[in-house]
Length: 491
Image (cartoon, rainbow, N blue to C red; front, side):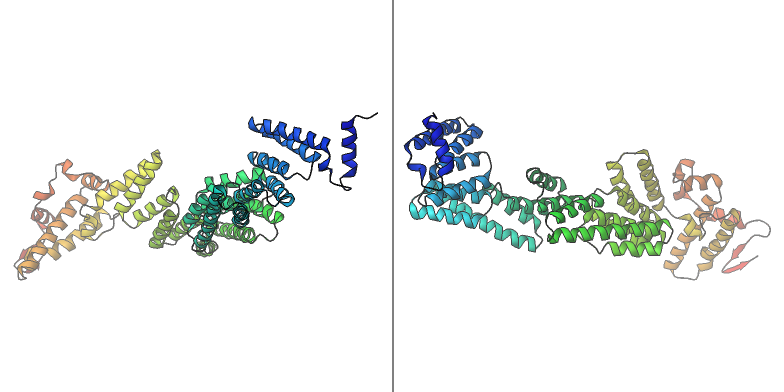
């Protein structure tokens, strides 16, 4: 009582192993009908429905190469290239002269980045049809990919990561579904410090394949280089779980753990005030992974902080400069270097660093630091009256008087009247400077203005018209004072 269609379906299900059913006229007609419906959906770009009807056609006639070829074309439009490749390979197994099958197989290999296999497919097409222009063009594309792969390998060995990224971009023009090329590009982007781009590529792959060990490794690498070491380790461990022999993930995981441990040891020693030990530990940490730019910048800055505590100011400046070279946006390193410049009286350099900081972060604190540096720079360009008298900036009134007495007598022109004209001129200049210095530092008001960097001219004192002899006479004149008679000093 069954219909002919039902009988054929039952017979088909039970008899595939007995003989080839493609000769069954009814099944062939029904398969062709499914294929035509598939074609109609394909033209409408409804590839999911087209796939369903081509699958029904294959179920009817599993030995028909063109049905597999049609379904492969649909799968390619759905970007399911690995599934499409399987259908293409089945099609050419059934019919080794099926040109579209070979072309599509080659195209799938190409899109997936297997240029050698793709070349073999296109060469087979040219054996069957020597003037096939598509095969000729695709063969050139395959050869280009092989060349870009070769160049990328050389670039990676030379650590020319920009070259690798360039080569992978060119290769991906023809091999857009190749995970291997995308991963290599992402790894090099990470090594170039272009973390958001690298993470984007790795995340796209992980959305399609959450178990991809290479993508997990690159994701971890980005976090590692951004100094998120704990999260990075989680990704490296996950990558090793998926691929226990993943050498890069194993090395990165080891480096990440070692770097974190050594940095924490250094931080602990610093907090405990053990600066020598902290300096040594930060130095050791810096040898672990030269590629970790962000962490190493922090380590250099940390070592600079320790160096300044140990009064190794020039070394601290050098470490800050290394940190800034690794990370030009590292405000803390600029601030640390600026302070070291201030401590070593390199005021122009300090002003330059504070200006850089204030341009980046316009806070009240940074503005004040810049003003202080500018003031010290201004003060440094004036005569240093403390240095002229040979006293400390905290000298008492009595110490200032004593210093003036000593220096004024030492440089008085009468004492050097027998010297050469050149020496007389130099001593006269020094005598005048000593008088200037005493005039300012012995007057509380002027001293205060001088110490705060204000212009003394504003106080009505024109140092250009200053007469040192008047100070000398005022200081030494009167009963019990000093007087010069020729070259003899007497009381």
